[in-house]
Length: 483
Image 1 (cartoon, helix red, strand yellow):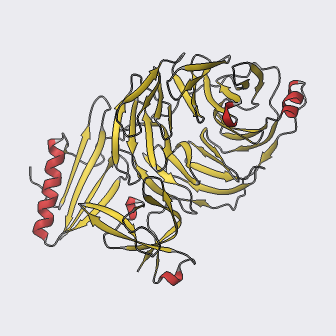
Image 2 (cartoon, rainbow, N blue to C red):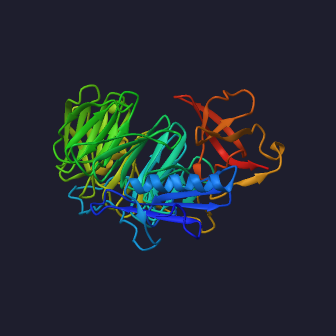
Image 3 (spheres, helix red, strand yellow):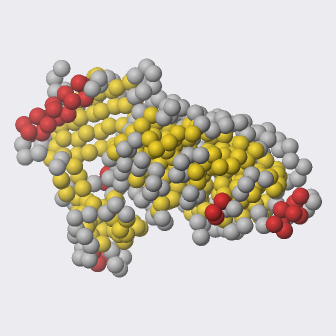
């Protein structure tokens, strides 16, 4: 085949019948500029642009890229000829609770679509739903901000004070600034089920039971296929990555050096939580099990009355909470004694988090629910006395911030906020890297920076940079291009 078509564009696809891959690769030549676009079939994909000294060298580089892909099994195709591969959404059922009493719900915010993503920190509550909406609320339920992402939110995770949303479009969005941007772009052949981020390293578990690890530069590091499929759990720390699937939990070395241990759980894993020394796996066989991080030994089992969709703990694992498929929420002591079981009052909890005597749930009916989990409130609820639930309303004028596809330009650093930092995009060994050029920083460190807006030689102004473990800087705040 010719390297580049008469229209100066070659479009290729790789689509395997078993669903192992379903992606495209497009190379375009415009004079000395070569543009490569790639990603999941049916999605916009990721774009990289390179400029060469001559048109001839640009054509030669394009031909080389096309040849490499053809040797890997890609073939010429007509864009739009294949439908996008369906994205797996979690199929859940929610029966009425069999509990005799209802939990003491303080407030409820209805997002309008089934919700899986939740994160609660010192100041805010975050919830993301299958419509792609992410809302930020304070602890009393006031809605502070709204983000409109392109596809359904699988989960929300935090890494220090950076908040990330993993979406069905294969991207992971950084929500730490006013305007979100795509920080990671996961390979098109990975059907995301869950993810975690630890010190800038992204860990992705998928439908096929694979674990894919991507570094802060959005570059693939390593992958493993566990013994089971449908991996709804991944948690990470300094010592390991903990991967939960329908055959149990497997721990891998953080550097991909091999398996540390594997433990079969009582039923397939549907959700995971972690504390410093233990991971907790909620399973389809009506239990939560606590596994020692060091050895994988099962230390305790917490028995529920239906399949466990979510679990969480109080600090140190003093109390263990679980949400089941029958719209009930449970609390156990550390050793496994059930302390109480109450109805949620509005669907099954698909994710949960405990903080300061409150239990926050996101449910099958798309609600973020705040439960008063104090001893006094639970005791009163068991006797049938609960507060009147306050339904939080969304302000009609609240704007929805969509991911940035371009950045604002400023003529001088003086036009940016005080204390801004200048970074520069450079070519290094065929890759686009970003380094800080303002004084007071280590100029050899890379800056974690969205690939979609990287332009060789361009300089950008960012509000702030923070060093991260592993020797790189993270952007805090907005990004502007310096012109």
